[in-house]
Image 1 (cartoon, one colour):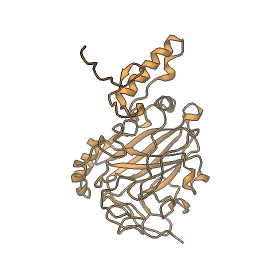
Image 2 (tube, rainbow, N blue to C red):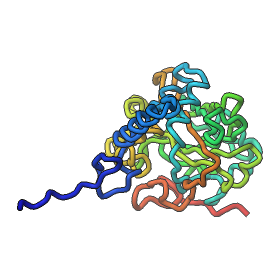
Image 3 (tube, rainbow, N blue to C red):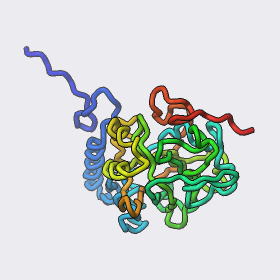
Image 4 (cartoon, one colour):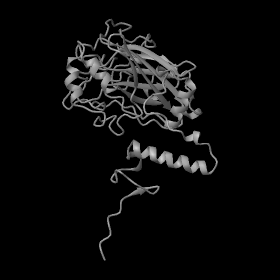
Length: 322
């Protein structure tokens, strides 16, 4: 008898495209196929297919595209929770040295300038960051009252409070509290691409403003990926010269944070241009009934390039404040 062909692992009757990996790591196309199969099955039992509708990848239904908050919430609920990611080695939330969240003035919308005892302003192409947070534990309604902390690198690739030359700055860090529509908006500058990472913005979500003084209270820690075409346009401008070569050496699929799915649910929708600035938008579903698996600030956890000093691109970490 001829030898039997090797058995290919399958799930719900469909061969796994990545047989050596778990079902949850089979990629976006396989996940969509699974959801669509379940959608058809639910239809046989008379359950509305809309209850398992698929959300567009990224935030195509974000406020930047003119959608209502209800449609954005429905999409986020269907898409599931935003992936938990590392906070990286430069969070400034007290988990790795400096704690900007303990400082008066951190709740602000314009994060381009330092505040408190520091002074200085970060330069770069203007960027408006608009994040809409939905409460998946309550059916995907807007997460009103959630406190959202964001931070990102400068156009040179350094992080305030950590990187050489800017340890005495706390710009490009700030908190906003979501209104009734679950949306927070920050005025900032477009971040660089530093060696070893795809361009990104860090995000921590807290249940309310009083919770931000302890980083362990975060109900979600994630990162926002920036589209390649927009990055290329920005990096062609003065001040971003180093980002051109760095971007050419990385990819979304190869990034150690976004690479598992190419940033499918974390890739922002961006509108605007270099001269007038860009609006970066993303909807993030947060489920307070699940245990957060992201966060953490061990040096190198952000995918910092091998050999980079622990204080960030080109920097050293300051001692924790007394």
